[in-house]
Length: 212
Figure (tube, rainbow, N blue to C red):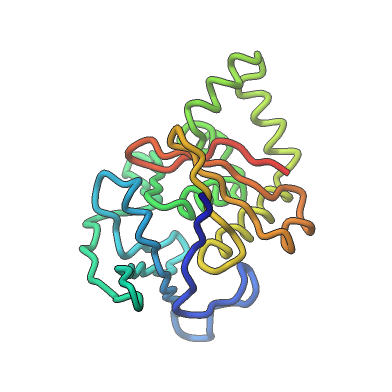
């Protein structure tokens, strides 16, 4: 079954396109995303409708209830205190992802800042860590792959995150709590990796693997 992300309610530039900082004042960006109703089917708790990213960008999710004739906007209950990335007073970082794009963003952020331990310990699915251990490669194999493919993975993840809000990325249910994010063929031919597998563990989406 193939599912597509809904259209953006507000157009934004591609990641890294233009500076958002003006002289003499602090600026911020608000992005409005349509959240497909099927996201609720993989969530055991209410999904937050407002997320503030690390760079200050405010993500507002709006969800429609499908009728025979149109999509009718419905109100969402804000998730109290929800943070995709939370830094505690002792320096501990906690990653959360209640939506697929947040799981991809967590991996991209860890790669961009080269926080490989955080990526391995929190953003990566336990089943991937177990598979690495069973093959004998363990964390060393993980590091070799992500460090050597860092740029290509970042390019793909950024395209997928943008595509989930439009038509550039499809989200496919695979079974066993696994989902495949797949770039549109017109985009896939331009990048090294075109598929990312993520897992819903009942609380968070986590990254499983990335494929050509």
